[in-house]
Image (cartoon, rainbow, N blue to C red; front, side, top):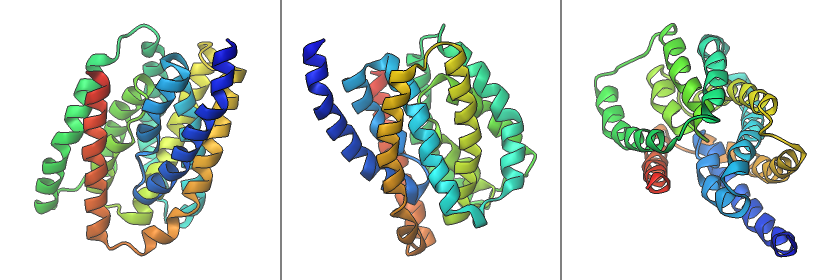
Length: 248
């Protein structure tokens, strides 16, 4: 126990430093913060604490993006998306406590890698999602969000297919994800997964992510749409490979 307590300052220094830069990156492209932090959280705090800590960090990260991009948010999309996503994320959180998620990681990692060429093809075809179809997307991703640590990268192709880019994409996706992670946090609390120690850890790490997110808006405004899309594809590639590596 003493050795664990002695290592905590080092653990917080590493995770919070990475959390700041993850907050900047996540603020620029709308996702990636929790995927970057997850391996470190598992290493330092263990897998049992890592998932609820990620949920709390995600809430704080999405709050910052909602505040930064509030005027650009498409609230109709959020309402339709979360009408299905919120009940499904609660169902997914209840599934998490009884289900091995390794095979889901394999599917999610493979899906992310496949979505890079698929997204390009759909963009060439000028494929667009209708508003009501975002409810179907919300149901599937809501359930997956309850089961796994993060699905932000999986949201990306669908919100882009609706026609959202840059600030509108980041703000709308963040607002939609915020309601999901709040529901997930409540479900975890009721299941006894979140305790005072996890809340403290999530708030400390999330604060550095929050600060990092505050530096992102100017970077986004200076990005061209093409560079923005390329940057997202790069993180989708890294995210997919990371998920597959964690599953393996």
